[in-house]
Image 1 (cartoon, rainbow over the protein chains, first blue to last red):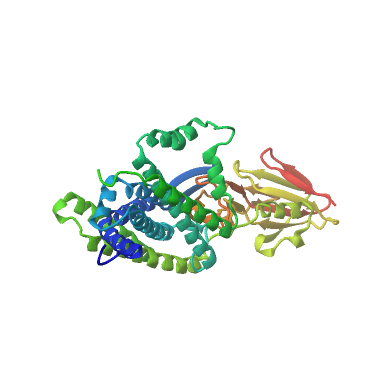
Image 2: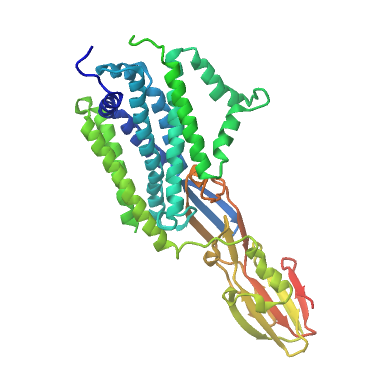
Amino acid sequence: MYLTVPRLTDIVKKQFRYKMNAYTGIFSSLLIMQLIGIFFGVNSYSSYEASESLRITDATSTGDTPVVLTLVWAFITGILVTTLAYRNDAFSFVSNRLSHHLSSFLLVLLASVVGGITAVLAGSIGKFIVYAQNSTITIESPGLLDSPFSFFIGIATSILYTILFAGLGYTIGSFVQRSKLVIPLIVIVLIALPALNLSVGGVFFIEKTIAFFGTETSFLIFLMKVVITVVVLFALSVAVTNKTEVRK
Amino acid sequence: MTSFGLIPIFAVVLIIWYFLRTTKHAKRKMNTKWIYVFFATYVFILVIATVVVGILDKKTAAETPKQIPVDSFYSVDIALQAGDLSSIDSSQIIDKRTHRIGDMLTITSKAFDLVPNVYIERKDVNDGLIEETIFKPFLAINNYDFSEQMNYTKPKWENGKMTLVTPSFTEITYTSYQEAFLLDQFTGATRRNFGSHSSDTRQITVYLRVPKDLIVKTDDHVSVDYVTD
């Protein structure tokens, strides 16, 4: 019998606040990844002769790299928060496995939302550099004021993909914490199969998965797909780590 | 605009420099507060950059080349082949000239690259006059209209001889920005493959209305299309 019975929501809140203060590396690494993305996304020069009396020089910048590197960051962050060092931090408080998962998941979710938004905004720096150059400019995408709807739907898409990658990383991290034998399996599925272009049972799993999300044309259905997938991934993570040791 | 656009770039460089500096001097490791301050500054810069870029998009929209359908490349030529000058927009015309001519017209070319097209329509009368209409050159890069930037030289006329001349060298430098591929999934926007180029070009087109029985002689480098009813 105890004088106070801690509520799950209170514990999760406390742990979330603690993790927000302790895991600042998540945000500094996001910043660095996006700066690298901006750097590599700007000005891929190419020049070609259309004829003897005409030369065309094209410098293309793209917002792809900040977005792609943000997804990589989300995936790695998802894995990192499940590692032992992070997991042991949970025991600074009265907690259980569920509260630890919930607070970590909220942290990953918040970081993904921030990452998703800034990934899109980071493209503005690329655009700035394009505008700063003294040449004819073609902008092959609508801006915030030209098409606010496209801009915000782009941000929402970016957030959802970032959450998806972070969720995937979190689940893989949880599996790895359960058993290190999962690592070679992940390497086979994520690297060897695509690299060798192997097909499993006539169905190329990764290709199908990419098509499942990437070819969706309805935003609402895409949203549902991501939410359901992330909930399933989170449930899997909770289930798989339920019987791991409390502290090594 | 140029110096204004460099502000966020300097800010980003400053952030990178600070990070590198703090990594080098471990003693000065940033605390939680400073990381969030830096991150908030970064987000603030991004937001400002996004808004300013939005304004610049609107401001420079008039200066940037317009996207044109691929068919427009051929529309002038199709109309000229049919002798239908009236259907061609007057903005496509560079100049209209008339020249006195005897019994014979000689067309030669000093241009060996992007030689202008020549169309000849015979009039119903022998009035001793050639009516020359010169149409703009055309250049589309990745479906953007760069025609205004093409250099051209009008044909030179001398004693019943028209000479097509090589225009001065045209160098076009342009910068383009493409939004992240993933973000276009629900906007319906299409984009070209990164780094791919396509260009359609032709030099000026010369349309001549010549007297009914004029003899026309051309050298090997000149291609003449006769407009028939």
